[in-house]
Length: 235
Length: 300
Image (cartoon, one colour):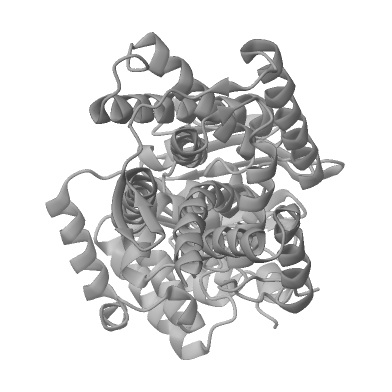
């Protein structure tokens, strides 16, 4: 579904991604783990068009090259990015945030369905629908950010550190919903620092270190790999 | 008492004009964090376009209300396009540069319109045709409410209601509010940020053009530098209300108009233009975020 070949991204003098290649197949949960500054967020930002790569290609569904497209065009293709730190529109209500997620959708009935689905996945959002999203807790904001991205009916959902700064119980809820979303047919590329949680739900994983992929295996194998355990799981 | 009422009417009419211009400042500031110094000059172009349209379309010799409406809307459309063009040519290429570059460019665009305007329209004042004959609608003692005053206030009010509807109730309005919060996150929603910014300029400039065309009716002498002072005053009005805040811009504009006319009436008309600067200084000293602005604490 998504194929990345030899991707390079630079910020001025910093060479943030140095020849990253990876693939995500339809229906998978693929996770990308790595420490702070390894380039995980940069990779997601390159996929969703927020950063123009300096070299390499990003192929969508094996054919379309998308690395030079503007972000709003990439959304139209069916890739949605839930950015790091949730980035909900704090000045708007929960409902307005969801409506923005459906910005490119025209069919009113479909949008209503999407809202219903969001409220089923995260019932708390229904209670808070008229509240300004800036007043939500961190966990609720993360739920809103995911629900908002789903409003666009993405085929591939890019999640950047959904567990960041959340209480363990909330993290569990969110990960459960991520699996549910995947079971309902959305492919997921998950970036996480919480390697343990991420590898447990992912079919496959990649380990990113200073801009390069150093390991690639099934989630289970990575979870049991001595290198990963030593470097990312705190053993 | 009569004089006070009369001055209040005058003040409200001017205040409505300032409010329309201030809304454009506040809208553009909301999305780009830019004080668009060329905005007052777009108001001048609005008056000029109305003047030429009135002549070309023949309404100058055959005045009618419908003629005025046509002139007003056409001038709004032309200036809307001008606003979008200014953004495209002057501001968009600098979007990712330090904010100061855009600000200085705005001053440049302002001068271009002022002195380019002198070149194109001629530096001498023109007399705006009486598209609607001034009549007094209401007379009580020495207080006169003319149809022009009423028209200025009503048209302004109508445009503000339309703007409020667009911003709060339509999809593009929602997108404007989203973009004013974050370009990046808006683009991840599938919003074309460039389009939204263009729309903001179109709306803001159209409002300024409406103000320009209506001022032509009340104060028929128009010339290429007529936008300088009202531009500054409307900017102060926007700051007074809290820049980026829509109701604030309206209240700020009305306060500015009324204060200015009262000062001119009761003290000296020499001080009329000084009022704006006094208000600006007081606001910056006492409440820098403006009447309706939120005080934001900058985290370092």
